Each structure stands twice: as C-alpha cells, then as structure tokens.
Image: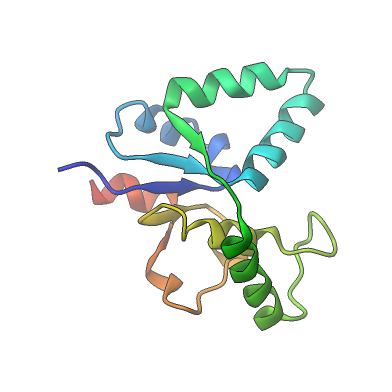
Length: 138
C-alpha cells in the first residue's frame, strides 16, 4: 500500500531531516504553484537558478499541481471566511488559502511547519501536519 499523498508547503524545504526522509518516501508528493513561485523566489535571491529548484523537485519526485477554477473558488471562499487574517509575507493575499485549495487536486495531508497560518475549517484541522508529525506517523 502506498504512503499517503502529501502536499508540501514552502517552509518544509528548510528542514534538512525532512528532505532526507522524503528521499525514501513512497507516496505522491506535490506542491501548489504558489509554493513553486515562493521557493523559486527564495532560490533566485540566493543566486541559484530555477533549474536548481527543478532538479531538486525531480530528484524528490515532487510534482507541481495545476490550479484551476475549482481551486480558485475554494481559495476565494477560504479568504472570505478568514476576512481580515492576511499573510504577513505578501501583505494583501493569503497564500495559505491557495495551498489548502490545492489540496482538492491531490493530497491526503498538507505538510507545513507554519500550521497556524492555515485555515482549519471545512475539515482541514486533521489534514495539516508538521514535518515531525508525518515522519512519526510512518
């Protein structure tokens, strides 16, 4: 039986222990487009290339998910529900909601070490795990 499908948040890529653990993971691994954009910005600001990011994702077997109208609608509903809780990084849009909306494309769990940034309504309270939690489940 395959491991659960995981959707990864940007912050998990700083956890070297977790990244090493992922090399032996047998489930599907994905990132939403917004995570790809955010991680790409981080890598470019360090003087690395997008090809470095693409190679890392390829080596870990991480796919970039599609974000379509269904996902955008879910994200809009989550943003409206959380009204005044805005992402500190981007100032006027809550990217965490777009990550959660990507969950509907694929994923048993969203893996993040910034769980407080994510909505917990709609049944998500049991779907958001830290890197330590998912490593200890298996």
